[in-house]
Length: 165
Image (tube, rainbow, N blue to C red; front, side, top):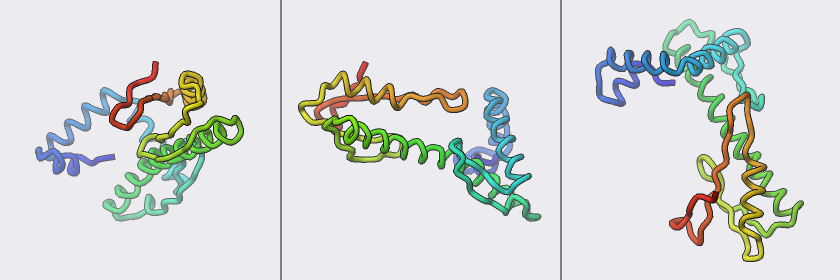
């Protein structure tokens, strides 16, 4: 989570304007602010933070008497939830692709993990609509009432990908 100072520096605006921008953002998206508060409160009580799949990280610096160190630790607390959850989802994605190939027998090859997804290649015998439907079905989940959507694109090359259905 960005501080007013950090946001002001990044956007080249005054710190006051950065603070106002953050306030209006969290006023508009109050659930995000509530989520941050819950995550920070848990870290205050336990010195741990967890991904949405319960992977933990201990951050004892949330107890620091130095405000700069403590605030940096709070940013790490929130970042861990987001980044570790993203990594967990990517790992689950790779396992599901493995299952499609080796348990379900699809001629599919996992090639490239990207920052928010994977790129896979299917052999010429794989029915495109069938595999796309299966991937979309397996990869679309709800996580704590948050829909995790799966977008499937197909095409002969990276530059020619188009959204499938």
